[in-house]
Amino acid sequence: MAKGQSPSFVFTLELERDPRLFSILERELEVCRVIYNTVLGMYLKREHQYKREKAYKRCLRQLKGIRQKLGSDQYNPTLIEERKNVSMQLNQLREKHQLTEYAAHQWVKSIRQHFGNQVNAAVAQKIASRAWLAFRQKLFGKATKVRFIRKGEMVSLEGKTNKTGWRYVDRHLVYKDLSTPLCIQPNDEYALTILSQLENQLSFSYTKMEKGKPITMVEPYRVKYVRIVKKVIRGKNRYFADLVIGGYPPTKTKTLGKGPVGLDIGTSSLAVSSLTKAGLWNLADQVQPLSRQIRLLQRRMDRSKRSTNPENYHENGTVKKGKKTWTYSKRYHHLRTRLRECNRKQRVVRKQSHNQLTNFLLSLGHCFYIEAMHFKALQKRKKETEVSEKTGKLKRKKRFGKSIGHRAPAMFVQIIEQKVKRLGGTFTHVQTHTFKASQYCHQRCTYIKKPLAQR
Image (cartoon, rainbow, N blue to C red; front, side):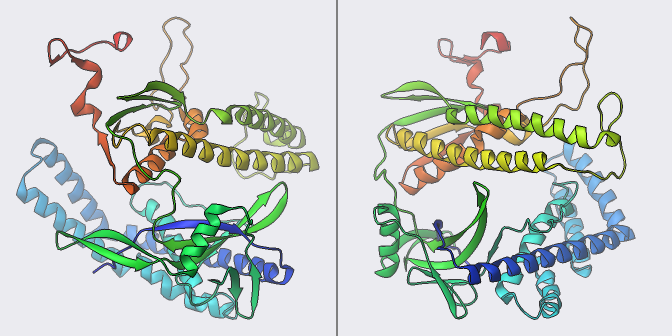
């Protein structure tokens, strides 16, 4: 039986500079990178053997036939039971080839011994679990490939508890006999509130379901585990401690408004209708100047890359296929550093803008309704190639990938849903296929199909 989870939130503080401790952290990050890549490679080898099995191919053929039959008879109990049996056979076959998360926890033991057990056992197991999460996407068809981490690109590690390895003790990050204080501003009321809750061991209550019945649980605020994150800010490495704390974070908005609130979200805008206010807002409008700056930097990087590697391009400007060797100039490295800084600023500004808009919307009502949107599908390119009737040229296959990447509407929906439920409100996703809001006629009280131009 899976262990029940209590609510938790992440509280981030920067570490004061300690060269000795940071050098140990850099060495452990590199060991964690090797562990991650090794475990990922072992998964891929076992997957190759797993997919060569005749039993695997037979199960796939059976599943394909069952899906085709279920298309015409969706609720056939015989077919549903047959599909369940085939899925159990595939699970047994995966366990036979050790394609599970806990198999990797056994593999990391020998890898840790190879490096002299420099990395804590809990940290190594968390890295193995991270490799499993990446490989699982490929195993179940949600991704086409997995990516290995290059040298110097592992930026975080975390443990399982706050008792061993990297841990938080009395406003300090402690590792073995070393420690460094956390940077806490004296006027940071949010940080001081959280730290006082930890030091005074205040309690919080939450509701969980057990045997179909809601049960109220009371637990003290505590640090579950610590995550160390390396960030490059203005060209310099800085280290942060993410304290994963059990409980609910303190919020500026203590209560919700009254009444229903309707949200109609798009790729870059949000329409809101409530009893007291209606309006249209652009999502994360402050990222526009940074988006333009990023676009110009990418063009300059591309020109620099083409000038130093002319042998890797055709005469028409397209990249040659096959293995190539790339040479990067000092100017290119400088531009890439500037691009990373712009992307970092964009992330910070976008999240801050989403939180500000969310806090304003919370005062409009307590029942929120939003249309369910599949943003992952909207950002993909079109598969079919179409020719324009007017110009005779090929139509562009681009959709809303760039807009969704800059505005992050899915992140906004996640933020507002979490805050509404935390404050005791309701947040409902309305299915557009069954609701059909644009086709409903309020005078006739019926649905009338209309073209897109009339909606």
